Amino acid sequence: MLTVIARCASVLAGLLAGVAMAAQAAPEAIFVNAKVFTADEARPSAEAFAVQGGRILAVGEQDEVLAYKGPRTQVVDLQGKRVLPGLIDAHTHAVIGGLAALSPNLQDEELDIAAVRRRVQIWHDEARGEAGAPLVVFGVNPGTWKDPQALAEVFDAGGWASQPLLLMGSDLHTAWANRAMRAKAGIDAAYARSLTAAQRHTVGVGADGEPDGILVDAGVDLVTMQLPKPDENLLLEAGKFAVRANNRYGITAWMDPAANAGPGEALFSRAPGSTGTGILPAYRALAEAGALTAHVAALLVASPISDAADLERLNTVREQFQGTPNLTLPGIKIFADGVLEYPAQSAALLGQYGNSGKRGEMLLTREGLQALVDAADARGWLVHIHALGDRAVRESLDAFEAARKHRDSGVRHSITHLQLVDAGDYPRFAHLGVIAVMQLHWAEIDNYLLDLVKPYLSETAFMGQYPARSLQKQGAVIAGASDWPISTANPWEAMHHAMTRQGPEGGLNPAERLDKTSMLLAYTRHAAQAIGLADKIGTLAPGKQADFIVVDRDVLEVDAESLKQTQVLETYFAGARVYAAQ
Image (tube, rainbow, N blue to C red; front, side, top):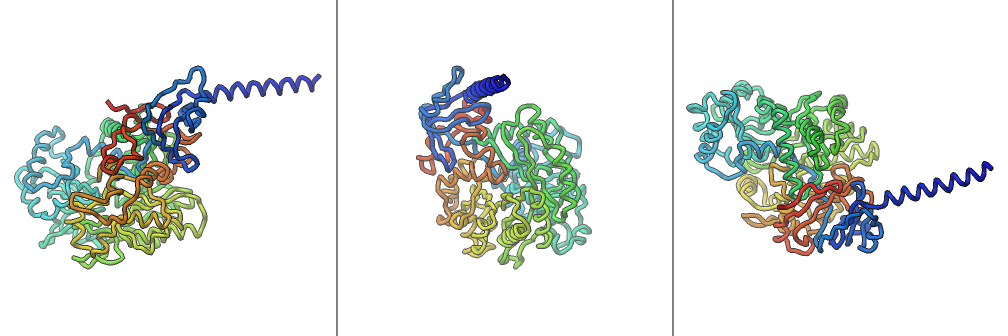
């Protein structure tokens, strides 16, 4: 009797399981008549896909996918349109981009001092804040710093003598501060004299020994720490702007590589043990408001003199935000050096700058960088290193190699920017499993390169910038990124530049061009690897989250010029439409 009962129970359980499986398998929606680029090696293209519970249930031929249709399944006819996975930006300061867009902003225009004065005066007159509160203008072309004395004649005189002003460079690594702003930050002749040899590049000094207002990296920190922190409402508004802007471009995920920094906090010179939360509260507020329609992998900037104990303190910040929907905190960002452009020239070179004979600055000692990377790798944390100069790239690779000798953590670390890379280091990316996160929108000849870089490098080094194809040929995984607001968040423009390497002033080594498929993978599968979410997003495959976009042209068939003009018609996040073109 018991045996019969047991058998009946088993049969009933099997029937119930079958019913549950059938119910689970019935998708809410099936998208048909589509040209699907899946970014999935196992099945690169498809005609249809099914979405159930915010995830991809099935991808394949139309009849194959329609077999999953249930009585309540909505069938959506995409009328032959191209579909791709949601795009991923592997390095963007999204909330800061939102703040910059909502603030006085010169949009990187090349302006003379008179034009800068007119614009800044209007913003000053319109400001309704506290009297004497600092005025910050974003997006200032760094070429503006060429004549700091001319800036001083305008912004240290008259009413500006008591009005603090910060002109923030569009590169976010350089700035100019007037005398009133420098006074708030304690930047005077005595401070300049107190700087060590390794720190002197951070504060510009005139022939009279007085600071001239030019600030680089840690010098910028001195004044940004004097700025009031944005209130929660402004942060939330900036975050909403950032999400809308990214969703409009088809971006459904990104890495924010400096999430514990922001106005009122240091970025390049963070003190060990700092527990600042930066713009992380904005992401939490977005999530709580149901407005974070993107995955965000937020990294914490580690101090250049961090140690293993400091990582534990950073972990206290991570723990405050763990569990926030659509937000992960996979590791840390390290600044290895600065930027290549004059007058900063703080990127660390194997050679030297032609004007000064200097080699730029490593922000960490070799031993310190290796110890920091090793400590993070031992925790299973992702490490993302800012390195523009070839010496910074080499020492970053050396640090990853040292960590790999201690353990095989399986973490896909990355180096970003990669403006100069020595040919001998190309194969090391693949060998060490280090992803090359590149802002290939910059791979063009424009005024930055012609005026602020070219005069100070050899022709060989100049033409070898952003060696994307060379890295790829040696097996490196290339991930796409914008570094917004330093450049546009528009990935279609970046793909165009990577494919043509043409800018307003000519071409930058066409041998380094990447093809279209490489760029689509750079902004999907490869970027997902770079932000530590390859198991969840980056391809349209069963089990992955249903993040996808519908575009207005067949991006696999059009030429590079047409690709640049691509418009996203619809963006879906977890199966829900979060953007539709008007």
